[in-house]
Length: 102
Image 1 (cartoon, helix red, strand yellow):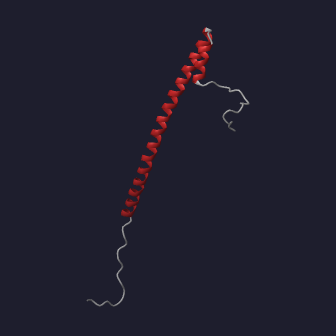
Image 2: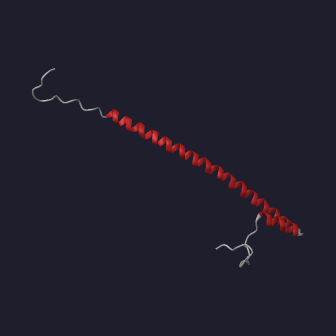
Image 3: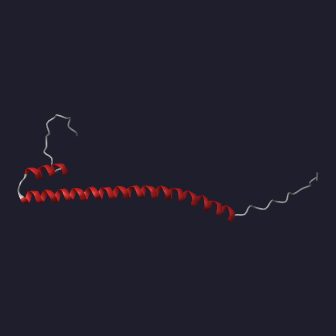
């Protein structure tokens, strides 16, 4: 369920965004708080890089899948053509009966 803008929030958030961590680091002055904030921001940066890498990988997989689909169709048509060549047509039957030549 989403809340409308301006409505009271029922629950406090359980996580910070990258910008929230940066703001907390500016407010807190202890060395430990600053060090922890820096580590959290580094983690956000690593996650962003990881997601970017996965997005690139996903794009490449989709591209590869489309190529394979095209190749599958081509291979299937080649196999069908080879099967047709392997089954020679039946020789025409000699007709029975009396035939008049033109």
